[in-house]
Length: 255
Image (cartoon, rainbow, N blue to C red; front, side, top):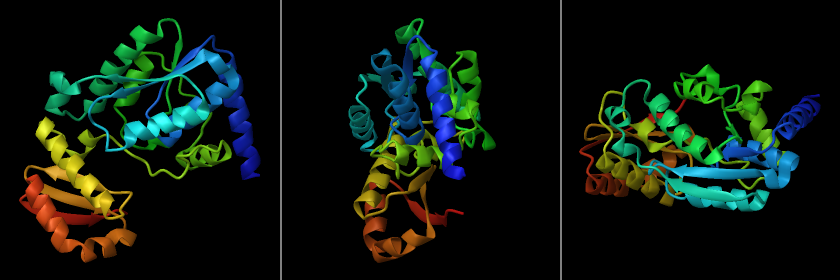
């Protein structure tokens, strides 16, 4: 029954997308936007294009991953650079930082899209959390088919597997700015420290890791299964994190 429900939702999304003249997918390369892009390509073929906005806030390898998925789908794909550190409201890092970021991104996408429909991968599970960026989606009339048809995060992963997308098992990712507590300024140096720390941990075999930045402290957020890797590499991690610029290091198990 569940599988039939997934298929039904996929068909409904394809049908809804087929009603659009053409669409521009806001393509992060994550599972959700990849599912939307693939279903859009099924429905509209050459009337689909995708843009990944490089804000300088992605973990290493994310842009290359987005390129691979776009190639697998077969749709035109471009990467556009946008310097969010030049946007004062974003740098101040208020509680609604994501709204200001998303608004800036969508403003640029609208210039490119013209009369095309902008499509995004927000899903039904996303609204269970605080999502200031959703306000910007509504302001720019972005079509959110996963949300509109009640597709949850787990259902999106099932859809990705059905569509044979190469990132179907990819852990959820978020931009590096989310690692910095609200109210603390976002700087290029802090983002570098986070990126370098997470890249080092990934080199040790960890794939679902976050390094939270708080002043000069780093907190590694990880799953229970990853603890042995941390214990085994404790001395090397401590040395590397201090080289990166962190004075205090701790860890927290993800619930």
